Length: 456
Image 1: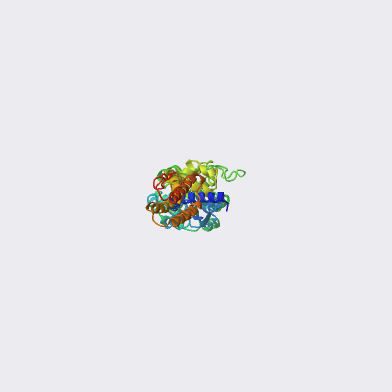
Image 2: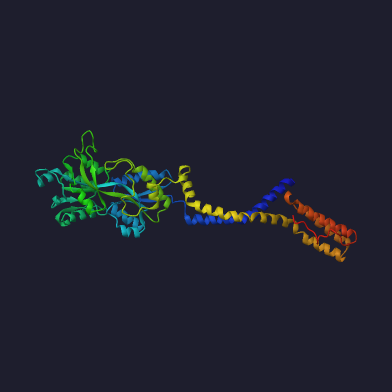
């Protein structure tokens, strides 16, 4: 191996050995910080949706497609609706879920570690009734406009677990009606719609976004009418989780002018809830996806009305608030999601390590210098032993010369960087000085190694 290359390799080895402790310390701290902060989210998350064909199920598919682009698999968990979704969140069987306003217990759910990622859309209470039933009750208008008119009718209030029976019960109670005053049933939406069209039910209640297949079907069904809430403002005052909304004239079908008039309805607001244990990066992805999936104009809202943080019953998580009311993370504009998330969650740690490395880096040059000079200075101990024998006139001169020659040969093989060659040459000069004194009869001289060594 050429001597120059050997010197370069030795310098690199010494530098690595000197900086090694600092590097290992920094790497150890990085590993500990990574483990503690857990910056990378799991690749799979469970989203509780709703019954097949519902708006919840439809939006669940769209969220799954949105997160798939970032390498996250969304496992969709069908359910009966909001109430069951809450139970799935509380039990840890779901990480994120759609929950309708009025279903949650704000105090208990906040204590359970649930938070909102924002309100997503209005979910009207659709009271569909048979026109012939309304004609029997009010021959003059042939319409139903109050819940008091439902007394004695066959009313389906959706499945248990959907959250609708609890809301309807509160509304009936406000009208002085008890569950026993009506013939209540709990069929699922599709079966209830068929029963209504077949005349087996008088009224069915659906709580769903307009995207629901059953809602669009019944709005066009002959002999089926939609109940208008003339007292919508009064309900809003009594029930904070309800909002008064208007189904605009012609919004269902402009060509057929359907509906022919504005219809006043009541609506709850559906929110996206998550568990405290759900990874923050996943909450951030869901909240950002909501901006795209729910930001357009709809039957009951203008563009960019949703998602929002104004109508959430539970506290909004920091990730939801930032996604809705803030700006996208800086690094996300230039880096893939996994990289931007890593930088965003680790930047404080990286900054702290940089501050820590500044004083630690000052230790490396002295360590490097010590390692290189030690390669030379370690032979001074042997040289002093020989010098002591020369001064004491101990041993045979030829034997001492042999020891000096052996030491010189060893030192001649020592390789040091050029910047430290002075120490090596000083050692060889001192060996020469001791040999010279020995040949001159062992008399003390001016160049005694015991007096002078180069400090470099």
